[in-house]
Length: 110
Image (cartoon, rainbow, N blue to C red; front, side, top):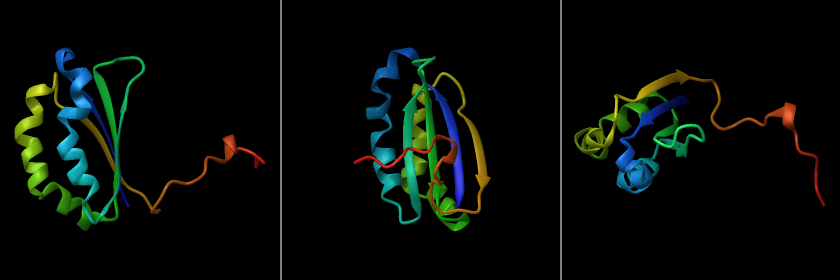
């Protein structure tokens, strides 16, 4: 899978509305056939920083994502809300889902 993490620093006056601002892009991306997940989190240290964790089935699915109309629309509309160019880590990893974090295994309950 293609695993991507990106940090978005949003202008302070738009930070509380970022989930709404990025909402159409988020929903459209999650609807893509090759999207495994597309999840936003807000930094607990910097309320203007949002971290996007996304994964696509393979390189073809990743390419389809960046060639989609909703991606092009995001390129046109989202930068006006950002304080800087987002930073990204992009890697191909040999798995297709999250793996359990064995070091913090939770015992069976019940």
